[in-house]
Length: 192
Image 1 (cartoon, rainbow, N blue to C red):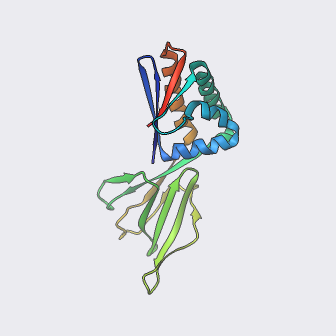
Image 2: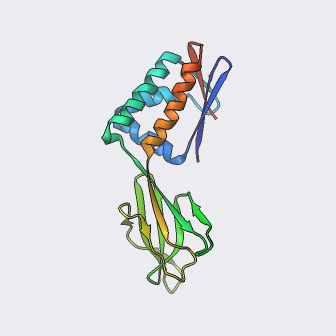
Image 3: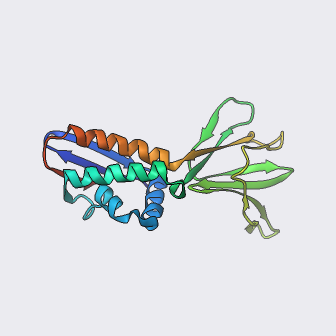
């Protein structure tokens, strides 16, 4: 699930589509003392309803969030993604989502779950009654590659790590530019 917030002023419009991971990161940042600024930037009354905010108040909140995200290492969050060749040897790479299953490592089946501040490898097996079981998650955020068996349908897994704060700052900078181009005193926010 993603969210899209539309900002309107005069004849100008800016849309910010937040991914599931961005929404999760925003929630974490709000719990770390940035709730008021996040509410100013992203807070809305309800789905499809217009929320009005003074342009100067919104601009100040955007600047504050950019500065905090760029300068406070305690606010650094990482997003983990995986890239896999499917099928092995094809040259076709798949990435995205929140997990990848069907990995064959040392003759056994595994699953990788990944996303905001997580990347874990979990052993998966079936008992004689065909009931599926999962082992304890193993944190693999420190790795850059997981080698799969040569006869595995899915090729080796590359683990990609990106700063979520950089993604948020990029979008906040676009919103800042939009606000600088607006001539009106108020901005309308709509959750779409």
